[in-house]
Length: 78
Image (cartoon, rainbow, N blue to C red; front, side, top):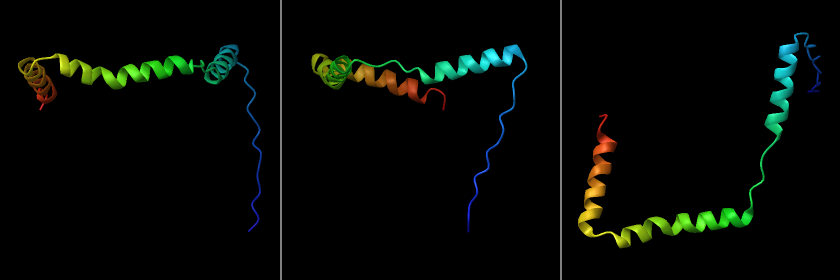
């Protein structure tokens, strides 16, 4: 089978508010801020070791209290 591509005509916008809205939407969706790769790596490094380091500093009693509080909050709505 032969497939044909049919181009559709775009509707011409006549309302000035629609035109402005369309322009803003087009411009803002194409803009993406670039991230600094070094900052991303540093943030990831801190995130990977943060929880473990905190758990090592806490006493067993304090860790248990935190876990119980988290469990209560998690199951509160059920």
